[in-house]
Amino acid sequence: MKKSVTFALGLALTAGLAACGQQGETSKPAEDAAAPAKDVGAMAMLAETRHGKGTGSVTAIDTAAGEVTLDHGAIAELDWPAMTMGFAAPQKLLEGLAVGDRVSFELDWNGKAGTITRIEKMK
Ligand SMILES: [Cu+2]
Image 1 (cartoon, rainbow, N blue to C red):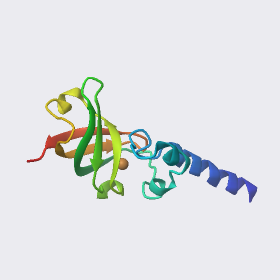
Image 2: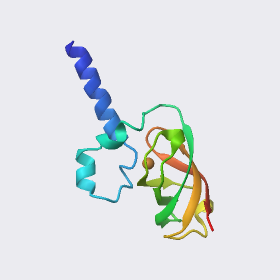
Image 3: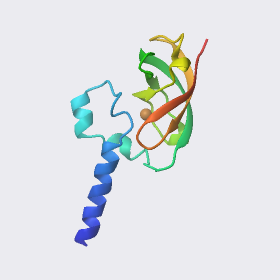
Protein backbone atom coordinates (compact mmCIF):
# COMPACT_ATOMS: atom_id res chain seq x y z
CA MET A 1 0.00 0.00 0.00
CA LYS A 2 2.66 2.46 1.01
CA LYS A 3 4.71 1.54 -2.04
CA SER A 4 1.89 2.36 -4.46
CA VAL A 5 1.27 5.72 -2.80
CA THR A 6 4.93 6.62 -3.20
CA PHE A 7 4.84 5.54 -6.82
CA ALA A 8 1.79 7.69 -7.52
CA LEU A 9 3.48 10.68 -5.91
CA GLY A 10 6.54 10.09 -8.04
CA LEU A 11 4.39 10.11 -11.15
CA ALA A 12 2.71 13.33 -10.10
CA LEU A 13 6.06 15.02 -9.51
CA THR A 14 7.42 13.84 -12.84
CA ALA A 15 4.34 15.09 -14.62
CA GLY A 16 4.65 18.43 -12.84
CA LEU A 17 8.24 18.88 -13.91
CA ALA A 18 7.37 18.06 -17.47
CA ALA A 19 4.30 20.26 -17.56
CA CYS A 20 3.82 21.81 -20.92
CA GLY A 21 4.13 25.55 -20.87
CA GLN A 22 6.35 25.62 -17.81
CA GLN A 23 9.08 27.52 -19.65
CA GLY A 24 6.99 29.78 -21.77
CA GLU A 25 4.01 30.50 -19.56
CA THR A 26 3.78 34.25 -19.28
CA SER A 27 0.97 34.60 -16.75
CA LYS A 28 1.71 34.47 -13.03
CA PRO A 29 4.86 32.30 -13.14
CA ALA A 30 5.01 31.84 -9.35
CA GLU A 31 1.51 30.43 -9.21
CA ASP A 32 2.09 28.19 -12.23
CA ALA A 33 5.21 26.70 -10.68
CA ALA A 34 3.31 25.87 -7.51
CA ALA A 35 0.20 24.48 -9.19
CA PRO A 36 0.76 23.09 -12.68
CA ALA A 37 -1.95 20.47 -12.15
CA LYS A 38 -4.36 22.24 -14.49
CA ASP A 39 -2.34 21.32 -17.58
CA VAL A 40 -0.85 18.06 -16.38
CA GLY A 41 -4.15 16.21 -16.42
CA ALA A 42 -4.83 17.19 -20.00
CA MET A 43 -1.34 16.42 -21.24
CA ALA A 44 -0.60 12.77 -20.71
CA MET A 45 3.15 12.45 -20.51
CA LEU A 46 4.21 9.86 -23.02
CA ALA A 47 7.74 8.88 -23.80
CA GLU A 48 7.24 8.78 -27.54
CA THR A 49 7.21 11.87 -29.69
CA ARG A 50 3.80 13.02 -30.79
CA HIS A 51 2.93 15.40 -33.59
CA GLY A 52 0.39 18.18 -33.37
CA LYS A 53 -0.99 21.04 -35.45
CA GLY A 54 -2.34 24.34 -34.30
CA THR A 55 -2.79 28.01 -34.87
CA GLY A 56 -1.84 30.94 -32.70
CA SER A 57 0.00 34.20 -32.51
CA VAL A 58 3.66 34.96 -31.86
CA THR A 59 4.17 36.60 -28.46
CA ALA A 60 7.97 36.41 -28.37
CA ILE A 61 10.64 35.36 -30.82
CA ASP A 62 14.41 34.87 -30.73
CA THR A 63 15.44 33.78 -34.18
CA ALA A 64 19.14 33.54 -33.35
CA ALA A 65 18.45 31.27 -30.37
CA GLY A 66 15.83 29.27 -32.27
CA GLU A 67 13.04 30.01 -29.79
CA VAL A 68 9.50 31.18 -30.30
CA THR A 69 6.65 31.70 -27.84
CA LEU A 70 3.15 31.14 -29.16
CA ASP A 71 -0.25 31.98 -27.71
CA HIS A 72 -1.84 28.93 -29.29
CA GLY A 73 -5.31 27.46 -29.52
CA ALA A 74 -6.24 23.95 -28.46
CA ILE A 75 -4.22 21.17 -30.10
CA ALA A 76 -6.38 18.08 -30.40
CA GLU A 77 -3.57 15.66 -31.31
CA LEU A 78 -1.82 16.39 -28.01
CA ASP A 79 -4.94 16.93 -25.87
CA TRP A 80 -3.73 20.44 -25.13
CA PRO A 81 -5.94 23.33 -24.14
CA ALA A 82 -5.15 26.81 -25.44
CA MET A 83 -2.14 28.38 -23.74
CA THR A 84 0.99 30.46 -24.15
CA MET A 85 4.22 28.51 -24.25
CA GLY A 86 7.71 28.44 -25.69
CA PHE A 87 9.00 26.12 -28.42
CA ALA A 88 12.34 25.37 -29.97
CA ALA A 89 12.41 26.00 -33.70
CA PRO A 90 14.99 25.85 -36.48
CA GLN A 91 16.24 29.39 -37.17
CA LYS A 92 15.31 29.05 -40.80
CA LEU A 93 11.62 28.54 -39.95
CA LEU A 94 11.54 31.70 -37.83
CA GLU A 95 13.00 34.06 -40.42
CA GLY A 96 10.47 36.64 -41.46
CA LEU A 97 8.21 36.13 -38.45
CA ALA A 98 7.56 38.84 -35.88
CA VAL A 99 5.70 39.35 -32.61
CA GLY A 100 2.01 39.72 -33.33
CA ASP A 101 1.96 37.53 -36.43
CA ARG A 102 -0.88 35.02 -36.67
CA VAL A 103 0.58 31.64 -37.57
CA SER A 104 -0.35 28.06 -38.31
CA PHE A 105 2.22 25.55 -37.13
CA GLU A 106 3.08 21.94 -36.49
CA LEU A 107 5.24 20.56 -33.74
CA ASP A 108 6.82 17.43 -32.33
CA TRP A 109 6.29 16.97 -28.59
CA ASN A 110 8.58 14.55 -26.73
CA GLY A 111 6.73 14.75 -23.42
CA LYS A 112 8.88 17.59 -22.10
CA ALA A 113 9.52 20.05 -24.88
CA GLY A 114 8.07 20.98 -28.22
CA THR A 115 9.95 21.59 -31.44
CA ILE A 116 8.33 23.45 -34.29
CA THR A 117 8.48 21.54 -37.57
CA ARG A 118 6.42 23.96 -39.67
CA ILE A 119 5.30 27.52 -39.01
CA GLU A 120 3.68 29.86 -41.49
CA LYS A 121 2.22 33.30 -41.27
CA MET A 122 -1.54 33.41 -41.89
CA LYS A 123 -3.11 36.17 -43.93
CU1 LIG B 1 1.12 23.93 -24.61
